[in-house]
Length: 171
Image (cartoon, rainbow, N blue to C red; front, side, top):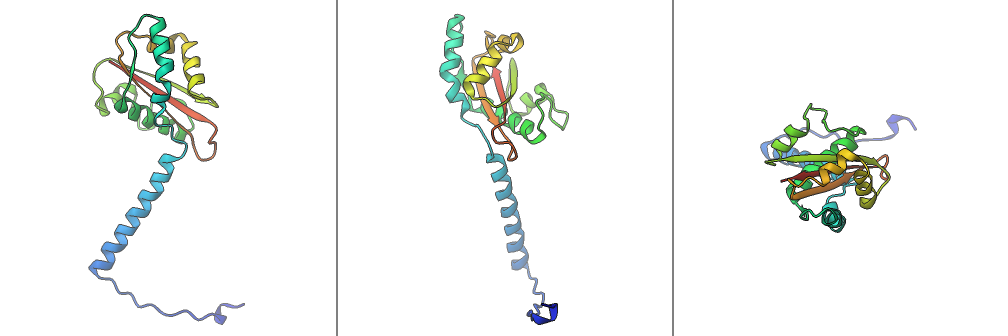
């Protein structure tokens, strides 16, 4: 078929304030809907609760007080996990040049803090086990200054089985 076989109505432009406001609102909602679906893709918020018993056992075995799961620290961990998943890179520094101390401060976390990160096809138990078998990560998890923790993971839409883990510990 050639283009001349179709007839299209001619629409006259009719822009007024209401049309512009409705259009801008629809555009903003579409953008937010897209962001929301990306942020939920492979998001492991709530992992702190899943890890509570394991973390309690580890700390009790060393005669240390139990770490409490903390939503503020979990949000900071999830933020870092999302960054790593988006960049497909396991790193403590974001693309904006923000290292761990800057991110902690910007998340309103005060006092001593540390971060453990990992990547791979693993669940909560495997991530914790891997950190416990790594001297610097183990040291963070057994630091007596820490009383709270947040654990989260994220994965990208192209590799949902590959998780980027972040644990933030703080006093």
